[in-house]
Image (cartoon, rainbow, N blue to C red):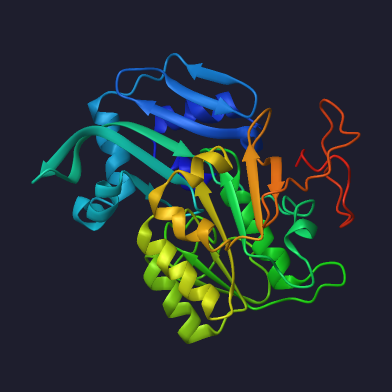
Length: 325
């Protein structure tokens, strides 16, 4: 976690290390607020470091570390409100917004930061992958609110598809990683394991990247994180019409909610997705709530599921407790 710890002044870094100790695998977020105790959000608890109350000098240190002492270098990220750092960790930013003609130009005074810890969980998609395959891979949409494990699941699904599993051979996978969160590429080289047949288009806008990847690398499966705009939807339709299977994520909490969004109407009208997987966070991220087929029938097998049963098996058989991943 050195890529995260390097962001903080020495004393705050020391206090975070002392508080977290051996629990880095359970840590989800570090919340940094000016003049307030630092907040640590773990899988099941939230804790504060009461003695760590960052001042303006500390805030400036963090911003300089993020920007490598050049705010100009992260002008686009400031406009979007987040920065992805080495390791795929996302740093959310909030403060005084600077607007031009009603549009956000940048966040001028950054006084709140949220460091979301990226985790590579090898095997996280093993219980789900059989649902995504029916003689061929299905066009699949993962749906979930923030912190439900969408990126973690889609990353591991990419690894499985590009390496092969059970009796299913590896496929050529093209990853459009606009936010550098799926592969966590550094100078174009993925830091996460995406399998042996994956190609990555890093830090490239999704809509343009999908078409570039199809033209240049002829993928059989295209993986995209966090779709939503009409432009994204149009590119997805073009990819599918070109014979490419698409696997993607989107923010949302239910199928009904998604169907109300105007930009997504073409996807539902054309019944693009053969699988829609709804994720939720009950105790930990990455838990499956429902899996819909193309007819919007829930096909998730849940009989016999225990209250707190978690299946971490590496078997590719479908278990009754697949809603716990």
